[in-house]
Amino acid sequence: MTTGPLGKPSVWVRGLILAYGLFLALITVLNGLGPDRWWLGAFNLYLPQALWLVPVILLAPFAMKFARRWSWVLVLYGLWVCGPIMGFHWAFRPHQAAAQGGGTLRVMTCNIKYGRRDLAALISDLVRYRPDVVFLQDVEYTMKGPLGAFFRDWHVRSYGQYVIASRWPLGRPEACSPSLPVEQEFAVRTRLQFGATSIALYNVHLLTPREGLNALRVVRKHPGRIDESIQDLQENVERRFLQAARVAELVRQERGAIILAGDLNSPDGSLACRALKEARLHNSFSQGGRGYGFTYGHFLLRGRLPWLPRTSWMRIDHIMLSPGLRSGRCWTGNGEASDHRPVIAEIFVPAH
Image (cartoon, rainbow, N blue to C red; front, top):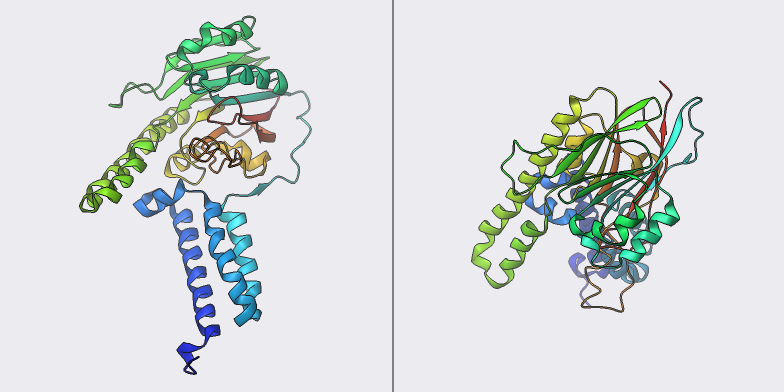
């Protein structure tokens, strides 16, 4: 073994640990500034963030052997990944009492993907979670069967791929997206009459990132097309942001309570979600959730690797609320019925 400073294993191990820390800092800075402002951050946004625990696992045995005092740094890195990078939340008071004279609404949203997985499991979820208001995306013809029969005695409003079903009266549905050059409506609005309170409901389904992410896969076979692929990814991000900005513009015009729910195809830190937060909406899971609240990813790899556990790794389905509405508890359902896990929130509506 060489005796020079650069030949000592402990120096190399410490250097790799420091380099890994700088990498985690870069991810954190990107996430803080808005990860999809840059193509690398946008790509990382849709990766399983638990992937960044792999360096901890690989470096741990070398740290224990050659730089034992640095092992605690790897522990901190692991907490860093499992905490803020993966989006861990913990509501200390998820079961708050409803405001005196007000009421509680249980809201559920799910992209059911046309019932192609297990429609009976979806109906079972509806029975289990007992929501008062249900937002569904990618529905269309699925309402003609057992799902439509389940909602027979509900107030139901349908528009294209969207369904809003409620135990309380609903207004007329309206498309929210005619002013943008897109291939279909990405949001539908109606009103809920909850006792004496009128609440605007937005059922939202933003553009999928699949097209932009698939553009990067082309680079493996055609390395010379990397600039074109990056441009496709950035255009995909921009279109989704414009959709969210359009919805945010409409939200700002509302007077009164608002519940926005659906498949935003965007993690909580994305530019699309930030546009909605700038319209004074807050995320119900951030306020009342415990854990990660991941909703998507559990079917992506099982086709090729059926032995893998059904694990989600992205939180792209959301329930967002206007000021005055509070989420006492928010959680995700099982992943049997759809590629998307349902999101359920108990919402406290103050008296007026």
